[in-house]
Length: 105
Image (cartoon, rainbow, N blue to C red; front, side, top):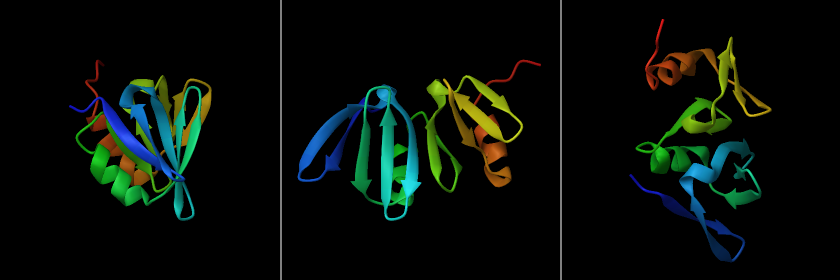
């Protein structure tokens, strides 16, 4: 597993530790990488980012969101809580999300 990725922000590359990424949000032709301390706006597609992070601890939960599974605190209905941030989960992606966890019933 990778620990870091480089993200191109304007004309520079920023090294981000994957564990610091909370979630990634789509915004037209851009994505916003949200960490605990910063937000990085990058010109790329969610599909490209999803492919890069597919083997890591990330899951696409909505057309507009990829989340770090380690950051999820609550899954309720069609919503996730990542700390105090609520993220919607599409019906089509809920089964995939739940399958990424061990469940104790």
